[in-house]
Length: 210
Image 1 (spheres, rainbow, N blue to C red):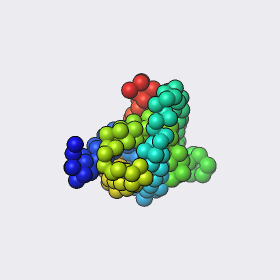
Image 2 (cartoon, rainbow, N blue to C red):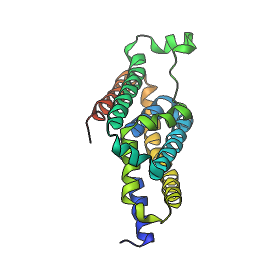
Image 3 (tube, rainbow, N blue to C red):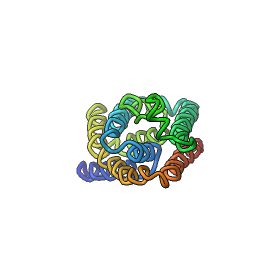
Image 4 (tube, rainbow, N blue to C red):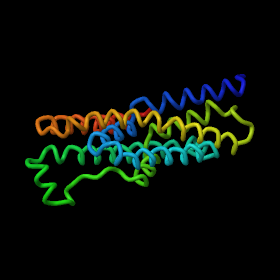
């Protein structure tokens, strides 16, 4: 059995690897950073972090065992998550498919896209299959990090609350880097369509059982 320090180090590594590797949250943060810049994407990032923290705590405290008894629930969650991502992909692609997008948006403020709010991003975690896999994996792999269930949940949640924003922030900064391309009329459409395509592909991939 690993010593507590070694177990905690392994948990930090797990949190970093799972948080930084591509998934729905990462691609959505990337797309938001590219479309709206890092400042307007911060609520989205905060919502992902807090929403996943709540989910992870719930899984460690017993929700994960219930899902093991009812695996059909995960199938439903995959479907809802995929539908949400396809909707997001359409929202990203729709302005690029229109002519005179910037002029139309200037005339009609309601036509302008907006970043995801903190609440929306937090709620999305409950239909995000990768988030469920991360929470279930952490709960199972690091059950020996503490004797008490509440203490175990607290350690895991705090670890992800610290590591998660750092990893997601890298994707947000990468999106900010793409923002300059979106400001160029000649590049705006292809970049926006590529981002929408990435989100759509992710939506299709998460429907595949793990």
